[in-house]
Image 1 (cartoon, rainbow, N blue to C red):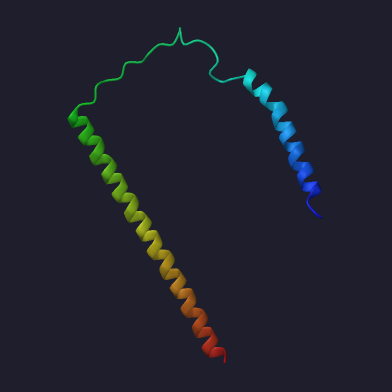
Image 2: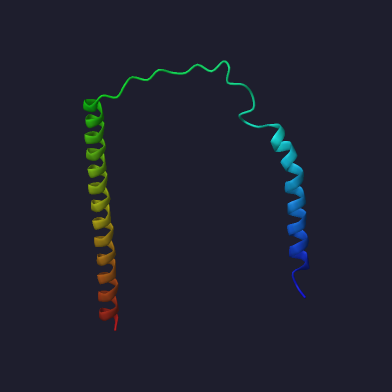
Length: 94
C-alpha cells in the first residue's frame, strides 16, 4: 500500500511543531504587567460630528462605486470590441 512516506512526513511535522510549542509559550507577546500603562482620553463624539463622518463616508463610498462601474464598463466594452474583431476576422478569412 502507498502513503507510508506521507504518514512519516506528517508524524515528523507534528513532532517538530510540538517541540516548537514550548519555545513559543516562553515568549508571549503580552507577558508582563499593565501597571505602567497610561489610558488615553478621547474627545466625546457629538451627534453633529457623527453625522459629518457618516456623510463623508457615504460620499466616498458613492465615488468608489462610480469609479468601479466606469472601470467595469470600459473593460466590458473592450472585451466586446475584441470579440467582434475576432468574429469579423473569422468571417473574412473564410
